[in-house]
Length: 223
Image (cartoon, rainbow, N blue to C red; front, side, top):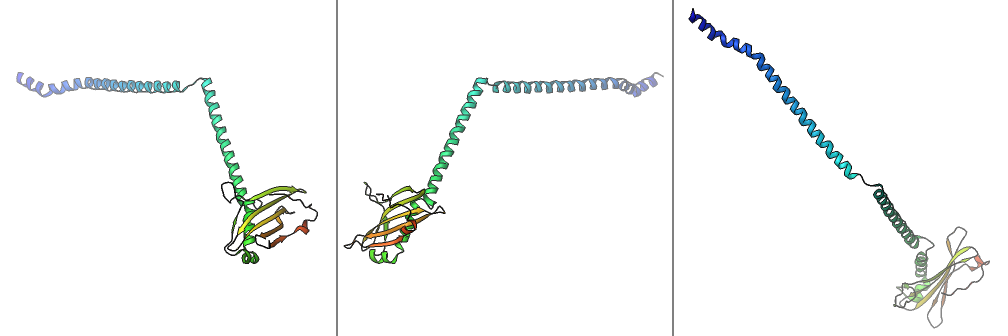
């Protein structure tokens, strides 16, 4: 009988003990799980608090006094004004250069067209000799790039008078011209002639429209 009890205890005793202890183990596991979850929550809160503090610190350091903000705004406005002024000056210079080079009323364009008109005349070619070069008055530095010209008003019309020189293989000549603004606002030759530096002081008249502007007084301007 005692042997049967011992065998029964050995066989079923461990199972009973495990059944008895199983709820305790489960409860303990739940407690451990809850503790780990709470620890994770505390860790997240700690990290969130640290991030919030760092953000507050950055915000606080970026906050500047009103006086300093006003100074920075004034400095920015002054820089912007300087930039706009530079852009305006650059635009004005570009406009002046463009007008000087490409406008039909610019002295440079009048000079270029007059030179081509003179070079294309057969009489000038025969008298001066090819090739023909054009140049302006000689300066103190012995440069001949300056073309003498004056711009004036006559009866409300803009006029330009110009003088330059031509040189060929035979002779040299002096070109004098005057252009006047017509009703369309464009320049038109009033006269243009070439006086050759030879013994006879030969003169070739390339343009003569003075009769067309008879109402205009004969104004002589020295170049």
